[in-house]
Amino acid sequence: MPRNIYDEDHESFRSSVKEFVDRTLVPRAESMIAEHTIPREVWLEAGKQGFFGLTIPEEFGGAGIDDYRFNAVLAEELAKFNVAVSSCFGIHADITAPYIVALGTEEQKQRWLPQVATGEKILSIGMTEPNGGSDLAALKSTAVKADDGSGDWIINGSKTFITNGHQCDLAVVAIRTDPSKGAKGISLFVLEKEDEGFTKGQPLDKVGQPESDTSELFFDNVRVPADRLLGPEGMGFISMMQKLPQERLGNAVGCVAHAQQILEETIEYTKERKAFGQPIGSFQHNKFKIAELVTSLEVAQAYVDDCVAAHAEGKLSAVDAAKAKWWAAETQSKVLDECVQLHGGYGYMNEYRVARAWRDARINKIWAGTNEIMKELIGRDLGL
Image: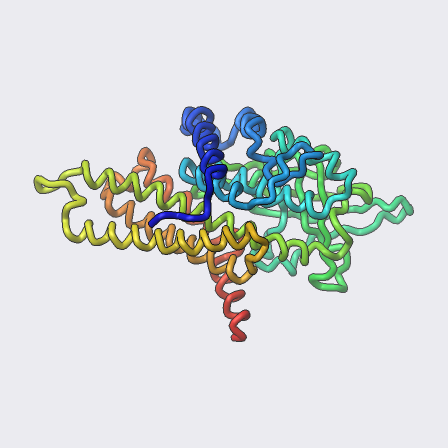
């Protein structure tokens, strides 16, 4: 089914991303898995290519492009290679940087954004806490004003499951500044890795995506000046709710692109792999199964494309983003599970991309808001 949301400029940009993937990422694929990290030189090379500054204004070192379709192209091509790299780069440029662009003062933007665009400073965002999960309004990390009249804040608490957490130079964190106000008592702060009392745990031992570092963040009487507050005090939760639809859409974009790539590779495998004297793809059951998978992905792609187009025009609702997120993650999971089955025993071997893809994709039904939370948002919108 032809896709109609991209023009020549988007496809030209896609070619540059593909070239970066082939030149910079593919040769490092196995070493990144073995070392459980994306090397700094990869971040810097991506920064040189302009991938991190798409929506950062030109005066702060970016391209100042007001067209989300370029973000979607980048997410698609990175996900085809590896969802771990796609998620790490996405957290940095597509999810966290927009908070600074939208909420930062001129001084804050000048201080941080140029090095964010170049990849010299890696961003993470700290929302999830050990006992909170998807309930962002219940976070327990606190910030109180220092009692010396300086205007400084003292931050205590922790975050967990933070992508880029171990490598990050800057962390945008959601902290409770007024316990009496519930969700309206949450504010956003920017922490720098040098801040005394701010420590980062070792990368967590995850089931999949070993290339990405996912860590805990700890705040032990971290003292920061007033200019580390990002946006108005008490507006953190509202800001997160405004930004989460883009995070969920980016997740959906990556889910579909990743599943499509692995399915294409699986189809080729079924043409070459023989059993009982013929290609396994020619067996009626397998042929029908592949037909179902291709159709499912094309249907998912059509809806996600509509959401991308809507977001590029500033018209995407939080509910539609939730629909895209849960459906794309669910479809990806089902497609990859069938791809493993079509590979037989080889599909369970880590040396095969299909096995790693199946393992890496499982988190998509959990992060960016669990699929159950997405359905809750949709149900509420229906008045249920």
